[in-house]
Length: 83
Image (cartoon, rainbow, N blue to C red):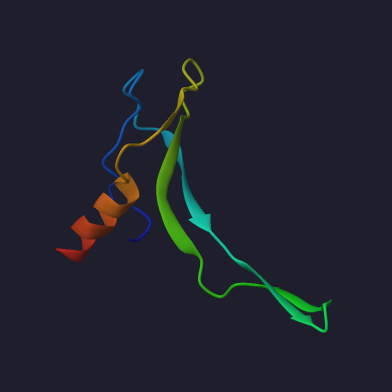
């Protein structure tokens, strides 16, 4: 996906297409323990998408927040791959 690609979604309350989408990822914290003592702590290398996407309407008269049932981000990505 690139800037300017269409994202097929709108606010379920006011039907606006001006939105803020937040896609949730899971990241592991990697701890190395030797002799019962913490030796190193680092972030995991591969964040994994949880599949959850949250929406927030940018219409000042609405500001509705919700969780998508299906990911509009993934749908847009799939559509861009099929071009």
